[in-house]
Amino acid sequence: MRKYVTCAGDMFDKISYEQLGSCKYVEALINANRQHVGTYIFDAGTELIIPDVDDEKKTKKLPAWRQS
Image (cartoon, one colour):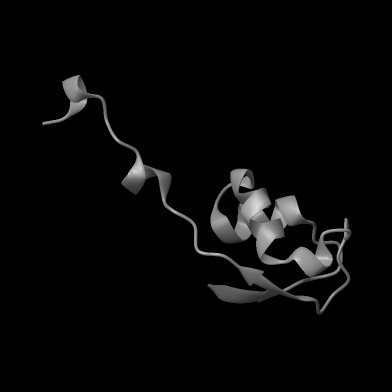
């Protein structure tokens, strides 16, 4: 886990995309910052926790016919 300080106008989906590489991690980001669940657009200076997420490429299991 690491921390991120918001810029004015940041939103969870933008932060997820820029800090975690995909908008699919929005739920994990919100769950790590439950105190801000009602915030749609952040002011500058809000400190958020950026959760560690599994890299799908590392954890995705290939089908048997694709494994070497």
